[in-house]
Length: 233
Image (cartoon, rainbow, N blue to C red; front, side, top):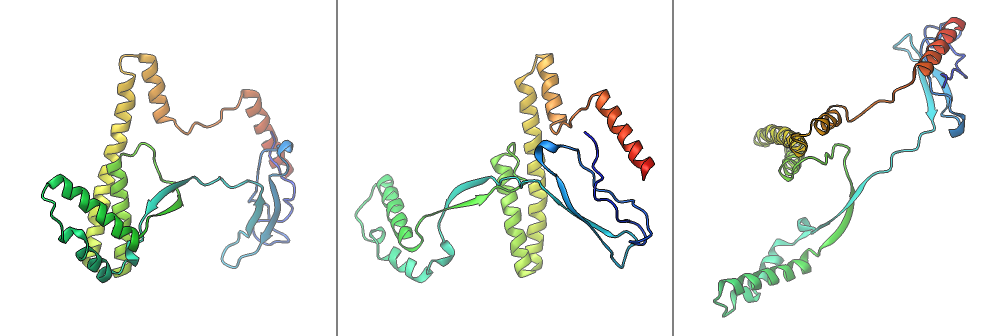
């Protein structure tokens, strides 16, 4: 586990011919996975005394998570034709008097007309990086409303849309904070009375992104390698 310095021969501070090497590209030496860093180049830029350092990282992209949903293309519906079909349907020419029967008829006929003008479609979309599993349905709907109003304000630029967007931002923030607090409270309530389980739950909540811990020998070797590299440099 040593830092790589191969290919670092061009100065990265001052002149490209007589400057110093200050900016480094370091990686753990792991031969089993091949070469992680390659094609290291140093290019001069006019606005800084530090040239631009670029490289190629042999890291596969994280596969995206997708979800399937159903929708109707309502924006493509011809409102005039849709209204004509509704008015000519049995909804306005029926002898049904029972409320429940009429509700079923209404649902069936409207669905049939919608299937003609806006048939149900299935699509897939990528889940955003900020999709948080512990968010409640209310918080997710608040986020969706905030994004919808943001797009409307960007499209129209109206002051009324700006105020609606600002209000939606505040409501979404409060809803997200409440959802996260409820999630933490529920996690702790599940282990209430068990000291050990409560401690593990608290550790999981406070330290979900736990870093790798190296042994004393590994740390000493890493420090020694950096010292030798700095001395040689």
